[in-house]
Image (cartoon, rainbow, N blue to C red):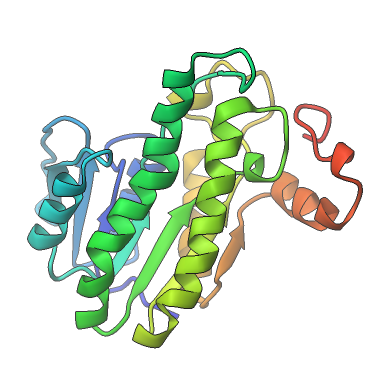
Length: 233
């Protein structure tokens, strides 16, 4: 388990939505410093927040962030994109972009920060997935999140020797700009951020942040045809 109080935190995609709620929540729990990233340069008036531009599709950008945040102890791998792109008929470029951000972008950040976390005692790497990692029917987005889930599970094994707590977070639908067009019940970013921060503090390696995610995880041993969005959600 890793304490948030007095820790140095990195939150990718920290400018809005769940990322912004994680920044706020970490500060409320006494984090000493939070590096918050966005795709474009931005400002934040709080002295504890260091705003940084990050492009997770670039290895060089991820490595530059790791050099800047060489004091990081907890990394929230939160940056992601979503487009409603079917696998069989959608634009392949849109699917490739989701994999590049949601799976490979997550991996680029993890690779850049693994030695930083090791040097700082192990710390925690927290990767955002989705209930759609487990539910078919969400096209390229769900497939990219399923890949991210697999990446996280392997990173947990690979980074165990350096004492890094690798956490996979699964959540259903969060009331953010990214999923605003999906007509389903949504949790607030603050609710999900609280569940994530609580789980990190208690040493969880997989956080099921809401009810639909808990129900879906329990159904994984059942018939695969039952794991379909929207019927499963």
